[in-house]
Length: 209
Image (tube, rainbow, N blue to C red; front, side):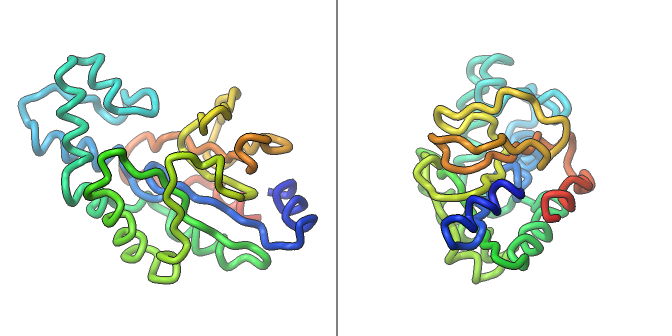
């Protein structure tokens, strides 16, 4: 975080931290598996321990082609995003970061292309779990490279043309030195949670320090 802090100081403004929602604050994977099994109880599914890749739809397509549309229908359904559980420790970490001196935290999340339900539900989720003050700090964009920030905390290892080539050994521990000219921020990559209800990792405290 020191490099990001120095960059912000040079520009005479607070350190701006952009925090993704799905897979970082909200437990998308556990919610998806739970909702898929409830809606399609007789269909094969991908256990959390076997989830690979960023897009669940593609892994389900590999399992059986027609399952791609079925799993998509789950996360496109009304109530899906609103009902996601917070990842343990994530909400508290955001509140702690936001309380740091000369630091401001924004929620930076990408809406689905079929946005009928997800956009409003993301706003309601933030209000419910982080409070109304963070509703004013929501940034929704399909391209996070257009957002000015010093740190981007995200579970996706590719942001547009930016790729984090080295696999992180633990969450919140892999900022890329010097940032990226395309992204404009240091990417801090979060690996997917191994299972729902996992305890928050100690590296959260290291990032806050």
